[in-house]
Length: 424
Image 1 (cartoon, rainbow, N blue to C red):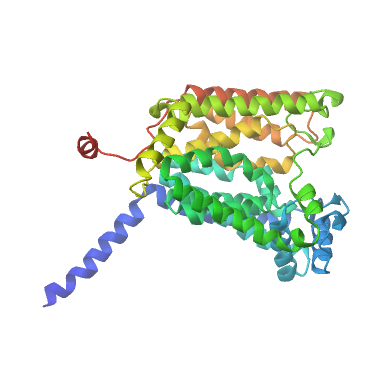
Image 2 (image 1 turned 180 degrees about the horizontal axis):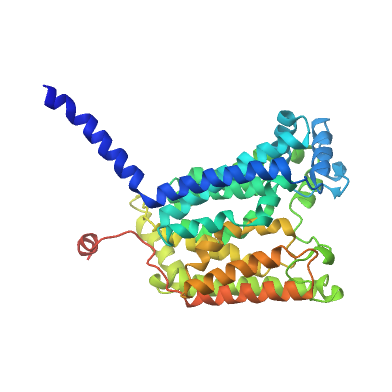
């Protein structure tokens, strides 16, 4: 009896021993702890930078005061240009912090650590890069500033986006789409992930699953916007989803070398949009759908499968490899970043947390990957941006895009030889 009662503790000890010996997990936990200390020191000793916080609070105060006309929700930096989820998030922040900066910095510091933990989970699920490269996620001066010294809404949007991606990796598609929609309701840049996400949904689900997931995402947008749509629908849609905004040339980090008359022209915007669409189509055809025979063949096969499956009314779900999901999402977003007419400093958070992953999807040697990472970080820390820093940033982006193009296209589906023989 004594021997039998002694076995469970030994098994527990062995499991703890194996748990601690996992270098990837141990490194991630140490990185989170070290970064939490760094964030605390930044909040304690680095002065807060006033940019948009007062404007956010003014817009939230108008909303809490009963104003539902989006054109009348103003701040000292101009009118409100974010969807309704932004107002709910920052109303809650104002309630918790009383509108004070210091407690808000603590809250954003916690948010930064949560986001880092989610990103590390995504990286660990893919197993696409060495664990020591995780430390690159904590080495950005600019991103720490965006979170805890500027308090931008980009931080909440990107944290929710990463949470949605983590849920997709766990094959919780419906919940992932709901969280994705919440992220869009805070800032529209999340829509850069929409094209690859839709493609992945078509690969993983049948028509019923796709419609259900999209309906859930649409319902979130409707419910959040309902108070504004009922009273002032045109003002809400035109302000919250204004795709024609022209940013100030001075703040552009990526196209500062372009003369201002060209920068603000409609022709330049159309050129970038066409480039964006072409690059998405090329990567979708030759990289993301390579194993299905190309984008057009995949779409044709998908519609054919609907016709064959419809009489039987059977649902079908395919398991996608984690590497394929993350690669398509991160590369699709990066293409949007490359073709954005203007990147402001806070927009670095839109793709920084994907940079190590993207660099390790290229065939470049490790030294070149680190040089590219350091070069991109350097360009984002030049203030104010100038012709040379913006040309350098665009050049580094193009080199990274070329590396992603030259990298191998991973097989999209989880399968085994036994299942292949069974299907044959």
